Image (cartoon, rainbow, N blue to C red; front, side, top):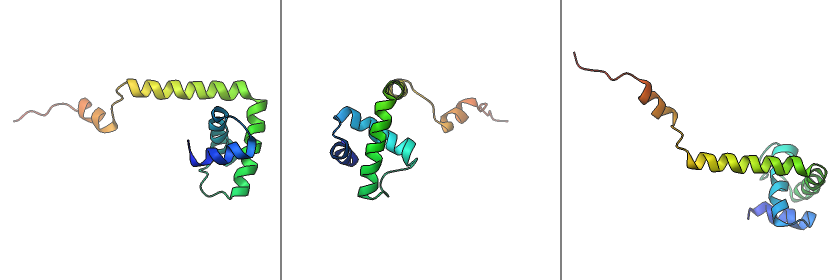
Length: 97
């Protein structure tokens, strides 16, 4: 559990699953930034605002969360070459004179 989830749980009274979505809403929709520079009061207000947003748009946020989890799982199972690996595989083999 993140250090912010405890604050979110206290500010909103939500469950742990909702706290994860609320934290994501706070980061991506309310502050559009990390949470570490917010005051405790700002975090509490944002948590309550994010909870209202979640309650009003739950299907949207739950679908987004499912899609993000599926994308993360797919990336873990597939081998995605790095930029350096792509460069090496696309460059022609140089042969001696």
